[in-house]
Amino acid sequence: MNILLKGGRIVDPSQNINEEMDLLIEKGQIAQIGKDIYKNAKGDSALKILDLGGKIVVPGLIDMHTHLREPGFEYKETIQTGCEAAVAGGFTSIACMPNTKPINDNRSVTELICRKATQCNLANVYPIAAISNGSEGITLTEFGDLKDAGAVAFSDDGRPVMNSALMRRALEYASSLGIPIISHCEDTDLSSGGLMNEGFVSTELGLSGIPNIAEDIMVARDIAIADYTNTSVHIAHVSTAESVRLIREAKKRGIKVTAETAPHYFSLTDEALRKYDTYTKVYPPLRNIADVTAIKEGLSDSTIDAIASDHAPHSSIEKDVEFEYASPGIVGLETSLSLSLKLAAEGVLTLDQLILKMSTIPAVILGIPKGTLRTGSDADITVIDIKREWTVDINKFRSKSKNSPFNGWKLKGKAVLTIVDGEIKYSENFE
Ligand code: NCD
Ligand code: ZN
Image (cartoon, rainbow, N blue to C red; front, side, top):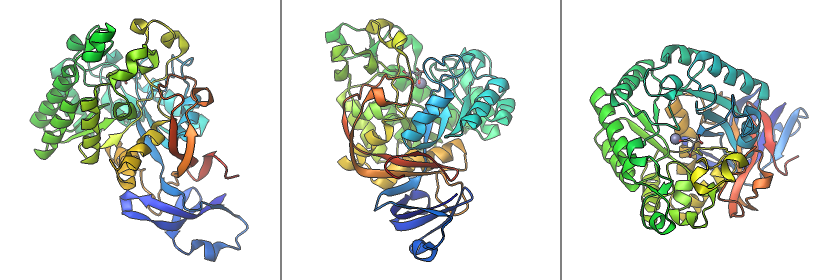
C-alpha cells in the first residue's frame, strides 16, 4: 500500500529541511517530498492519504542503546514486546545490548536476535555484540565473525572493560573493521558497593555512594586510548559534568570521540531517590543539579551527539525489594521522545538538533543506512504531535516491565504514527 503524508512539517536535518511539505511513500521507500504531491495524486484510489494537519514528520527515530533481555530474561522483555514499545515510542530502529543470557558474544546469539526481530516485523533491530567473551573483560570476541552475523557495534555494556590493554586492542581491532566500540565508563573499584550518586543526598539517606570520578576516570582513559591509537570510541550514558568537559576538550583536539546521554540524566537529580523508590536506581546513578546543567549544555553545544534511552527493563522480582538489592535500570522506549521534547520546549535544543540526536547521528555512529528522509531511502518515518498532552501511565506500557520513575508525569508531545519500511506499525487517531 502506497501512503501519502499530506500537510505535515518535514524536519529532516540530514537534508536541512524544515518546512511544510507532502511526503509520498511507494513500495516501502520514500518516493518524493514536495509541495504539490497531494494536488497531483488526489484521484489515485490505491493511495492511502493521511492528513497530518501540521504535525511533525521526521526520519524514524533510532535508539542506539536498548536492552531487549531476550534470550534469557524473557520475563522482563522479549524482542516482540521491546519492539512493540519501540514503535509506540516513535522508534523505527533500535540497537540492543549484549547482556542477555547467554551473552551475545557469538554469532548464534546475534543470528537468533536478527531472526526473531525479522519475525516480529515491527522495528529494525541491530544487535550490539560483546567486546569480550562472556563480557568478562579477559579475551576479545570474534569481531569479524560477529560483524558478518549482523552486529553493528561492540560493547560490554552493563560492565566496563576495566583492563586498559584489552580496551586498546578492542579499539584497534574494531577500527580496522570500521565498527564502533560503545564504552560503559565505570571504574568498578571506585563504584563497588555504591547504590546511588555519592554526595549530600546519599549521606542523608545513608546509602553508599558512587562518585562521579568512577565515570570521569574511565572517560578520560578511553579518550586517551582513542587519541594514542587514532581510533574512535563512543561513550555510553554520560552522566557527569566532568565527562562532558573531557569529551568537549577531546573533540576540540580532534580526537574521535562521540557520546550519548539518556533522558533520565537531564530530567532528574539524586533528589528523586529520597523516597527510596527502586525505579530511580540506575547505573550510572542520577547525579546532582550541576551535572544535569552540564549535560544540557553538552547537548546544546553538540558535545553530546546522541540521546539514547538505555531502556533497561526489570520485573517486580528485581524492583519490589529493598533499595540495596534492587537491580539498576529504567525503561525508556515509551518516554524518551517526550522527555527529550521538553528540551526543545525549554530552548536547550532546537527541534532540528533533537532529531539529529535521536535519528540522524545515531545512524551515522552505528553505520546504518537510516536517519534520513532522502528520496530512495527506506520509508522509516515518525510523525510527532508536539501539542499532544499525555500522562505517563506505566500500566499502559507495551514494554513487559514498568520500572519508570516518570509514572504520573504530564508530558507534552509524542509520537502518533510510526512507519517502518513503508508499513504503519503504530498509529494513534489516524485510522
Ligand atoms: C543496564 C541493565 O539493566 O542492563 N542497567 C542500568 O542501570 N543502566 C545496564 C547498563 O546499561 O549499564
Ligand atoms: Zn551501561
